[in-house]
Image 1: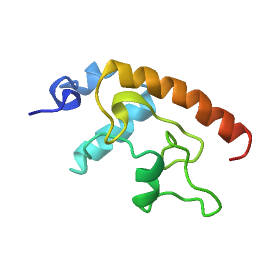
Image 2: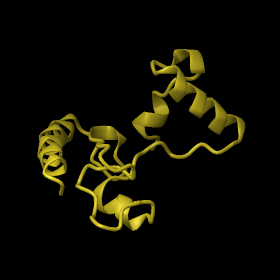
Image 3: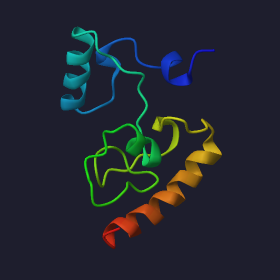
Image 4: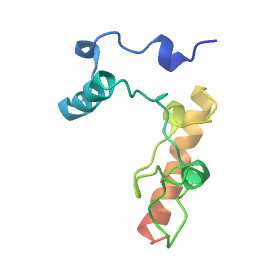
Length: 104
């Protein structure tokens, strides 16, 4: 089975609805033949990957390998790809933001 991200992804860079600097990074990855699967590691997965840069704390549940950057819904690796889960991730994001603002 092909993932929805692969099935419905744009076929040309001109079809992307992103900022120019994002498209430039993607063009570079394609030209070097280094295109990843397309999901972001968050929370425990970000920590287990060895890409979590901070030693003084673990990432919040929706925090990516970039500290203080959250991701929710279908872009997360290992997430269930359903609308209801994306709504739950939105609620969880509020909790994560409060924790980050409190310095945790």
